[in-house]
Image (tube, rainbow, N blue to C red; front, top):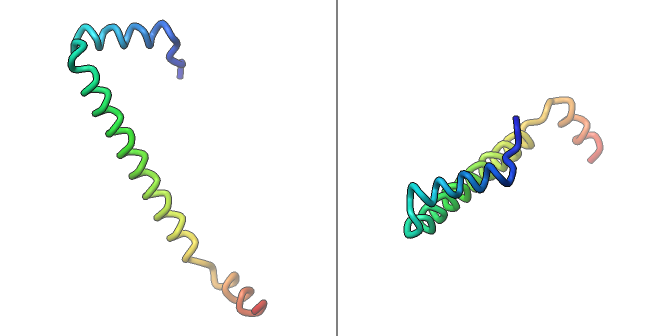
Length: 70
């Protein structure tokens, strides 16, 4: 997948400025930031839930070894 370079980024920002105007760009940036923050928070919660569920289930052999060690 090709990377977005400086010329492409400038073109996208210029188009956004033309389409939305200078008054709406801060609101648009805030909305995008909130969306990205919410997505990260949700994905982190899913990863934590997966880790806690995976850690709680152990094969019987592992439980037996732990019981013998203690």
